[in-house]
Amino acid sequence: ARSWRTMQLAARTLITSAPPVSSSSVKLAARPDASVSRVGSRRKKRSVLALRCDAGGLVSPPDSGSVREWIETNVDGAGAVTNVQERGGSGWAQCSAYDTVSGRKFFVKTSARDPSMFAGEGAGLKALHATRTLVVPRVYYAGALPEGSRDGNSCIVMDHLNFGPRGDQAEFGRQLALMHVAEPEVAEARGGMFGFSVNNTIGESPQPNGWMDDWVEFFRVRRIGHQLKLARDPAMSALGAEVMARMPRWFEGIGSVRPAILHGDLWSGNIGTVDGAPAVFDPAVYYGHSEADFGMSWCAGFSDAFYDAYFEVLPKQERGFEERRQLYLLYHYLNHYNLFGGGYRGQCVDIMKCLVR
Image (tube, rainbow, N blue to C red; front, top):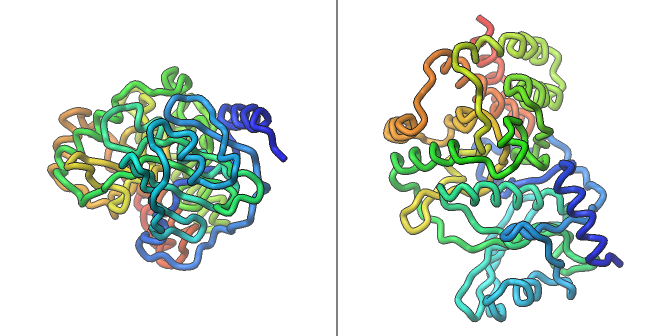
């Protein structure tokens, strides 16, 4: 049996040394053109990981093995759980809403998978929450459940927010820009590094986030090059090599790229409002070039009002903008090809051919 002291030490090691994979992929079921995944879902060896995200410390997982008792024991003022409602899920996680006697409500995801996926989501939400811009759920726990828990192997517990439809696009654009210019919470990013403190996933594809001090090299190696390796398509790899060789020229004349916290998977299914204020969820967080958060714009529905408000806060850098826009789109199209196959290959090829003309 695990002791909590053992779990604390393992958690601190994993959180600071970038564990293999984490996740925010409950939204996959709603993605466009979703079909059979091409990325394997091999079960990973269960690791020991726990993260108390609200105060930066660590707390014990539920000793009795249930999420219900963890909430009752560890969330100050919550009180007894009075009702649990299932809220659907994805191929790898189940979602539930927990009501408590105090009136507070919690959104919980549970899974039979390795806890590192939820640990990555929790770390990302915590970093977004620290910017105090867009509304994001506050996370209380992300990590392992005790052996034999009836709720699975891992869970994440966060505030339940009543997400409404997309609101004022101009206000969303303004708040996103303010998020991008906020001082990074993570020391490495404050020091000019790109990446994140943990690896995570984009959908169900692994997203490596090891720190690098050069944005162009980071995006070449950790994003485009990584997705091309996952694709295992010689023709696309050859075309991709030409794209990666040309990348530096599209960043000439714009000065140094400053690490900005990125949501990382900003499409319409992850955007809403809470009490009228713009809100986001299910991130794939890392620190990178602010423009990279436009990479899912092809299914995000950003309006002219959104862009106008965004660029009022963070002025548009015209030189090379269109090429960089295509480059950031390419990363997500490659990921969709790796996840879903089908027509995404043709779209990837078209973007790459456009970039190397």
